[in-house]
Image 1 (spheres, one colour):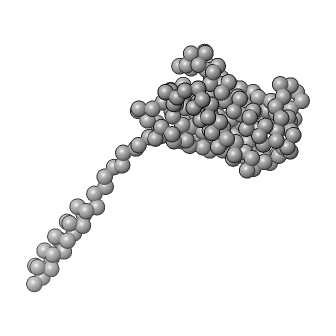
Image 2 (tube, rainbow, N blue to C red; image 1 turned 45 degrees about the vertical axis):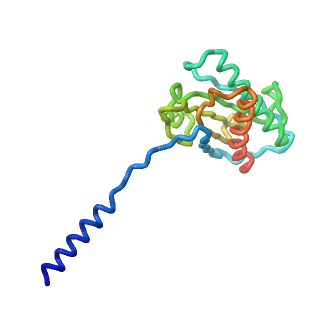
Image 3 (cartoon, rainbow, N blue to C red; image 1 turned 90 degrees about the horizontal axis):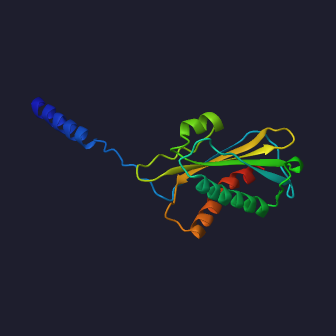
Length: 188
């Protein structure tokens, strides 16, 4: 009788252990994934009507051609201006008269790694890399013009849509900027 119970327990244990096999999940990268992160550095707020100026930042070495970089930065600059204008702020080319500066940069992961973003910028959303897709990052910050201190920083990571037409790029850029800036407005 004791042998039957021991045999039953051993059989049950082996079945239980074999049922607990973990199958590793494949990481599936969706071309439309966007990861966003932001942080408020100091509690300065800006009223509607406040003036802002753009301060684009470029990485020193990029795999993109100069003309491609110019086009992408123009897309993002236009989207940032439109988004801030839509929330009651006014763009100015006169940085000396602005209440805040908006610094921003765009880079592919092959040119600017997550590690470097963390070291230099302090935050990254951590979107996983994909063998089949080119990951890119959009970094933006609000700097107080009077103190020169960063008020807020935000990042977005997604995958490049190289096959998109111009209208689709404009729309996607506006979406990315809007989603990141939503986090600024929530704390302003």
